[in-house]
Length: 206
Image (cartoon, rainbow, N blue to C red):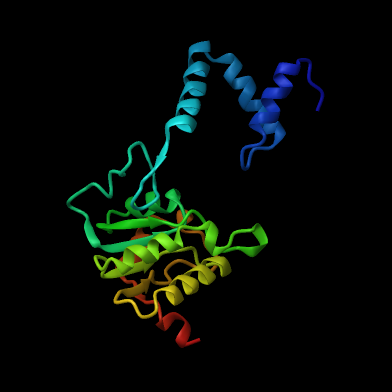
């Protein structure tokens, strides 16, 4: 792809580094931004810079937050004895959109995947186990995607919790095997949360 401007080429290159954005799409987006008022582009760049420099992670659940404690964890109406374990913020948003869940969350920051260099130590599993040991959590819902990596992570967490007094459940398989949680429709995801099953039974019967 030949460019008449080095500035344009650099902007397209940086835009194409985003997931799912090829060079042609990046070019279309950059050209669109050039047609917009300069103020709009400045507001976008300022929002991204501010996001990157000031964003925090909730000290309790590791969710992305504007403050030290996210809005969900600081809400006294949420059930602190019920914690849903998810991969990232997209899964929190998907479950919240169902309006079927009133507990708290624990964001792992990924799932165990040796191929991608993600082991248990790269995730927030140790802080999850420590929270369970404190005794306030009565039930953990393992709500990771029904992929091999998701199942491996679920099983690893389950083994780490052996001997601790906590009920461990998983979302019902209304979510098809191989599906990512964030792409499930709200009705199916909501029913999967409500109809969760004991995690142990998901592998003992295989």
